[in-house]
Length: 136
Image (cartoon, rainbow, N blue to C red; front, side, top):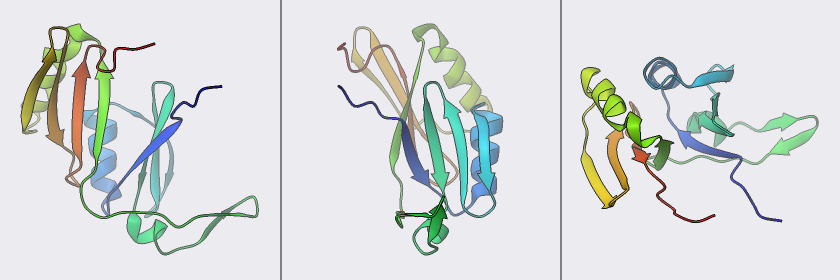
């Protein structure tokens, strides 16, 4: 039985800015929100969790009587989104139109390219067109 990544998380202390960015600009579907604690987004077959580390590093939380371990980090992390190759220029143009700086663009191979940009918290985001990890 192989493992799959069900969720990944990033951190920000300004959930309002994060919500505007991920909901309005990137178009992800917000499934759950807990003011000052988290935003939970559906992202294809997985989940993107955005936590406020000021809360998750310091406030004990329980779910159905079981503790959720404290966690969090400060500083930028990296997250990559996958898109269809024919949507590459559309996504890049959308971000540029919304004054999002494209930091770097890389041609990884003949069929794989990506570009990097930042979210409002400074996290390094990447959009990849093509099968970056060409395996099955």
